[in-house]
Each structure stands twice: as structure tokens, then as C-alpha cells.
Image (cartoon, rainbow, N blue to C red; front, side, top):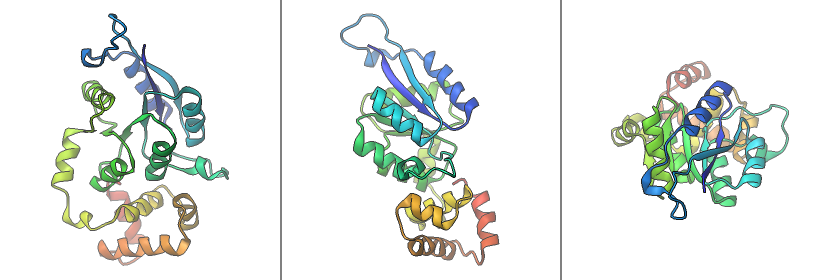
Length: 226
């Protein structure tokens, strides 16, 4: 019986590339199904681009593994709160409502974002720069019930910038969403917080980073690997 996988990535080229890689990965001997002597392939049962498509695919397929981009583009006209989720809140919702394993595949390198993803319920984290071997090892580890973090990311988490360490996960999430172009009102809705609370997170992050105004803030957001 194959291991079913859903891929969620809003870049069509990246998503189709992942589909091709997964469909050609050999299945490790360590997790061969006991009922079959033949290697059972991984099978991508759905590849989708948005939280809305993801939630529908999860309900339909109940996959063994979800490969999830941490930051997803959402339709600005979307009104359903679940269809606007990404990042921590989307992982928490999936963990609460579905039994799938979650491997985050993201361009983010921030130790705080990696930690936030794992604390929200992700089973593993790799970057989009990972090669086929690393991706295969990550999938194997997650499918065995282990936690996998790409080696160089683990080093970064252990030797992170002390200035970044003081920024809380919610503060980094506000900065991340601002970096995507979201307004404070949109961020408040997506994080289920009041605008006042979101503004407080923004101001605390600015204070910790010694940022004096919004112009400096956007320069920092652009330069930080959030």
C-alpha cells in the first residue's frame, strides 16, 4: 500500500518540481509495508496552492504526509477565516483536525519560525534549497515518527543571533505577515487577535530590534530571512 502525500505550495513551478521528485523517490526498506514484498511508491494524491484547496484535499484523501509551504498566498477577496490561514495557525488547525504527518518545506531560515512551526505541530522542517537526498531522509524520518530538521537549520537554531532570540513567535509572525504586504487589520483577522494586540506585537518587535520607524522596519523585514 503506497504512502499518500499532499503537497501544498503556491508556486506552480516549485509544486510541480516537488511532485516529480516525490514520485521518483525510492521507498526506504525501513518503512516497507509488511503486507507486501514489493517496494511501494510514495504517491502524490493532490498538489494544491491555497489553504482552501488544502482543507478540501485533506478531507477527501486523509494522507499519510502533508508537505506544506509555511507562507501561502491567499485570495484577498476570501472571507472564510480558515481559507486565510497559513504559518503557525494553519499547522495548528491541521494538527487539531487531521491525523496526517506534516513536513514544512519553506524558504524561511529564521530559527524562531522553525521553532514556531515545530511547536505548532509540524513533524519536520526543510528548506526549498534541500536536495533530493535530504528530502528523502526528512520524509523517512517523519514517516517513522521522528522529528527532522535540516542539518544546517539545526545548527542555526543552536547558534542563533542573540538579538533574534528576544523576539517572540507571535512578534515574528506579525513581521512575517507584514513582509507579505498584509495590513494590520488583515493580520489581526488571520491571527484571531485584536488590532490593538497586533500593533503591540509590532511595536515590541521594533523596540527589541532598535527600529525607530516603519521605513526602517520594512528594510529590516526585507533583509531578515523571515
